[in-house]
Image (tube, rainbow, N blue to C red; front, side, top):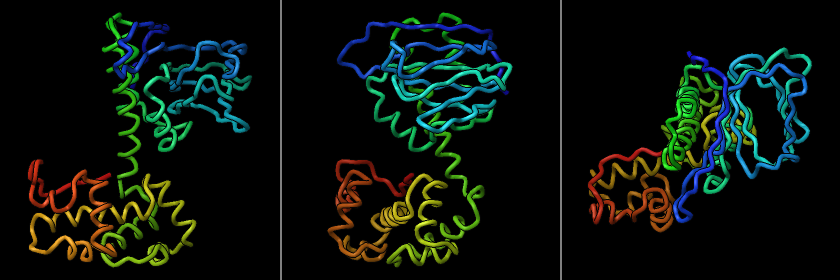
Length: 294
């Protein structure tokens, strides 16, 4: 359960070494708004470019992005890019909106922010006891207690929040027992048949869905496409065979479902960082008997 902190807003303007990839904290706060005049237009703000993460503790507000409006209730956050075609406000139907927020400079964060939007969307939900909310609360508490004294401390706190956001969504995606039954069936089918799968039609059939609907549903549930899931299974099995079997690289490629040794080597290197032969010999890297992939 999150313990609500006293209200306040704290800003930072550290002079960062330009050569270092410092994540720049611009401001953080905990606020309660009750005035119907509370309104921010993302196209009219002059403090950008910034990224905003705002998490509701109680009450609710409206967040509009483009033509779509979201009600941001307790336990829900929104992500916004400033400047941007959005606005957020306290609607007439809400008597208050209490929230934490963090504003971050965009420098060095563009790729990570884009990844977050793809994985968790613009209006994700988090339990008050979640690591994301605890990390958000800690960041605010450090600011309120005047314990953020330099850009390195600020960057570390921002990085921690970003990692918790990514990790929480991944953890939710990886809880197979929470997956819809058709997706669980498809995953079990792929885990048993990955070495001989030729197309998605068979997998979709095992899930009782059309190929296109299945692909969309599987990706939304797990965070990766069905073929990425199959590739993950094949590479994990290939790692075991490279360490424990006398099979050649070519034979292992066929054994785990690749059409050729050369394509297997290309995919293996892209996922593991080394060619299969070097991995087998533990050449210039530690001996690893098992690898796990997201």
